[in-house]
Length: 118
Image 1 (tube, helix red, strand yellow):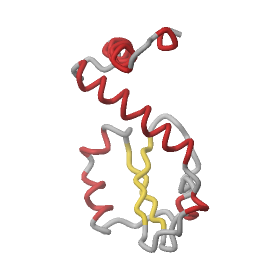
Image 2 (tube, one colour; image 1 turned 180 degrees about the vertical axis):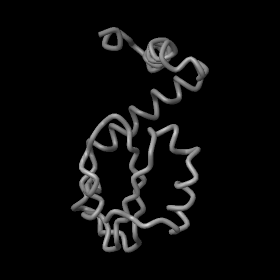
Image 3 (tube, one colour; image 1 turned 120 degrees about the vertical axis):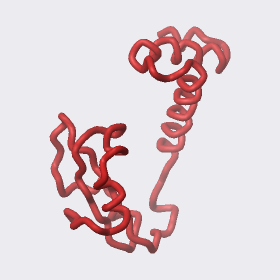
Image 4 (cartoon, rainbow, N blue to C red; image 1 turned 90 degrees about the vertical axis):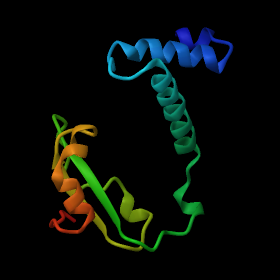
């Protein structure tokens, strides 16, 4: 509701940064402002995205899925098979979107050293 009252992007990004600084104490206010703007731009682009207007890509896709507290079907590729002519390789890695970056399996999956789900 506070964001609706704002008249400028600067006001909105300040409110976003202040709200999330409680949760993400390790990020600076400047980084949180950048994060808020990035999220907004990505969501705006997603609303306008129409995969039928683009030709499918020809290369394979490697999807690294986090195994966290949320249980989702392992075989799900988030619809990536609709945007590529190549194979979608899905690797499930223990952790969340932040912690998997420290997992050695990420590099192994990228280097095609791990078996994949799909």
